[in-house]
Length: 464
Image 1 (cartoon, rainbow, N blue to C red):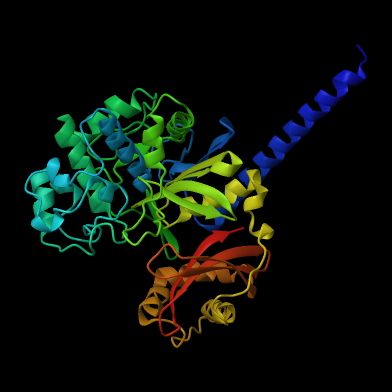
Image 2 (image 1 turned 120 degrees about the vertical axis):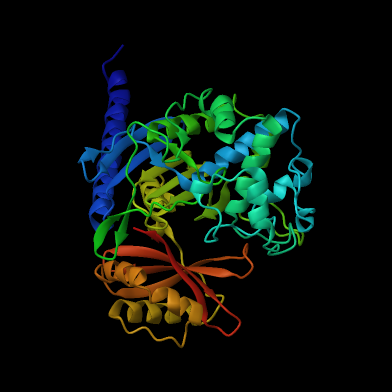
């Protein structure tokens, strides 16, 4: 056999090693940039490509006070990434024949308010129940450790925000109610059921309850960036049982992803429900499945979710068409940071997701791009004009926290152009996405306008 027959596979192997090294270096460089620019104490990252772990690493500090580094075994709060796990627990009970997705929740919980009689388990799972989220309300603090009847009593005075199934509003209350259903039906505390039916069978031995009363080895400290300095997080925590009460490690989250890719956890029909968009009563699709947000990025399917609690951020993004999963855990409570990091890292492994691959389209709202550029430029210069903005958005952009964020963006360069990318019709009002170049960076901005043509929503979704 000639030597040349061995050279080609060897060259392929060398190429693959070089590509993997380039990816690793790019990810490492990018994460170090985030640590510096965004003042993040610590970050843990996992990348899974076609079922194989290609990146698993911790960066920065789990404890700034004690100089403890982040490792793959550092325990972070994962926030609302917990919801996909709560949804899985409900689906296990469906498989057990103990819960029906379309049954009223009054089937499983007593003393439900009359206004909630039309709310089903499926409504809770898809944020379409209309039950008001307790986020920001008094009476739901963690120190109370509310029992089912007390939770319902505290929430029942708030009317439904809309008719169940009509639309969705993100609701932590819905997932805490699911947690109470799990307890009532199984006869076990929520976390005990999760541990026995999900975490232990999947080998997720470090995944547990975030309650500060528990001593958890290797637990990261949560932080906030307060305008110009790092601070400890607010210790007055909300009880997020079922909605965001889980802590985990990046290694355990890789095991979670392996279960999602395998065939032994949940039946095919359960997975189909898990990852299916809810259809509103008007026939339009929602962006939510069961504990997952389902969307398309550059025409590529994304099933994922972010998590946010005081002092922590997380993201679990599954780019289905590209065979790429990116999981990020961080101990900085900067809203959306986990998702922004995961989105950027994915592009190193799936270049079609890059903003550079975007092809401009005609604007559906004439002049919106120029209006967006004018607002961004004025915001960077500190001369924001309220005329093109709704009063609510103007107030939001005028906070000290918002100004600090814009100072960082302004330091990267002046916005040069705005290219329309796509519309999103899944919400109650259309939103529009624009790619904006500024210096050596590209941003994807999401914009919405009200009936008067004023910008009512402005948020940065991607940065690269």
